[in-house]
Image (cartoon, rainbow, N blue to C red; front, side, top):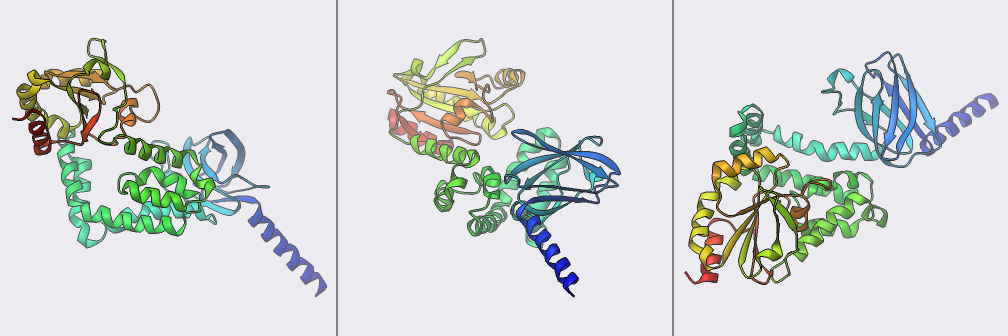
Length: 371
């Protein structure tokens, strides 16, 4: 009896230690023998030997973070949020696409499971009968010729308004209930589209300090602060970009005029569909002190040139600066996240209004110029 008690206590201690340590077990990996390399932004954490599709790895602790797991011989990568505790990984590498395995099972860790739940809401809801039309349009986007994609996408976005709203309602509730968990920092970029700035700020205020200070969260909050600073009556941020010939054009060069800054791209159909009407406005008001400055969000210079030639734009056009990371420099300065986006500036570089299109732009210019 005494021996059984000792064994039981020893097993219990081992289980407790596993919960306090970082333990990663691999099962049914779809490979016989390989090496699994664990890396994060700091570099390689460790290399694990995989034998007959399984492995067991432990260490004192690991920082809760997003990690990349790479099967060296198979050249298959997968991403996972790892944290202390006993975690079990199951992955079928035969389902990898172009060397990346999108879906894995990682049980035992709360953050990876929460992240999966967060992103799975969209798939679970769209399978419901009431959203069949939205699902059909999603499939259509995948199969249509490239020149029809933007039209189908626009139809999909209109048809899916209630669907997107319900997805966000579920995601928001999950965030509110688990706002102190690390996964929040990994999904924060995805909430920018469905959430209002007020909703994001409310979530932010309820986060613990260590979550608030994560670079991903800080970046999203900084974007909101930028948008708040780009308000009517504020001075428009200064910038300098190059036109087709390589000449530098600065916002200060246009002082003394009403300037409509138009963020667009060659691939953006709604942007280019607005050009005929904008040409009419340009012809009507240009001599009275109205200028348009197009900022093309085209990293591909040839596509930008092609669009300029096809649309024959009479106003100033410059190319966005993509020398930094994650998108264009100037569009981020102005806090815009999608195209087309516009901002109207007065002769003193003060912001008049944002996101003017169609009739709203007509009315604003009529009010300014009196006709």
